[in-house]
Image (cartoon, rainbow, N blue to C red):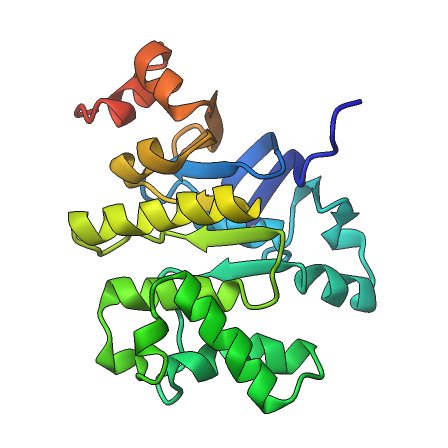
Length: 250
């Protein structure tokens, strides 16, 4: 019997007023894989991520995370489900007045009864996992953009969730820093079995980390491709998909 997917999406549609962002989006995410949501600017990638975690309401369709339908969950079940996922937003979304350790401690303090020394120890362990052990006492203003992204991942991992969402993790980073972040994501996924859902339009990152992907398109208002990104680059006959993966002008 096939293992239940970590995420199951059936016929998802989102509208803002009269504008349809996307419609009829259907896919599964398997346990332990790095799943990429890709596409051009304005196609609804980040909106889809927010829809999956319950921040944007669905106009149609149903979505399940870790076997639970988040839209149908009651308050307590919803809170319990959200404790089992981690999210890193585009900028890292760190609190500027707090050190990196204090930032990572926040979800531990919110959702556990651990004393401060234990929280601090766990937070420093997560920062060490992303290569920031020596920067634990720094403020966000004292670190680089790439370090802020890593710190955001550390905070998303604070409660050891089986599912992590990363929104544009490589945006604004130089190629070397971006490659280092890609390597970190793959290492965490392979070493911990964590499932990643990554929103990005960065082609090199998609090919470096993605096990499978879906591609959204603004004009089509939905999905136009699904599969292994390397296979899509080589075999897709869809003109928009081919142009994206081969960096050709539309």
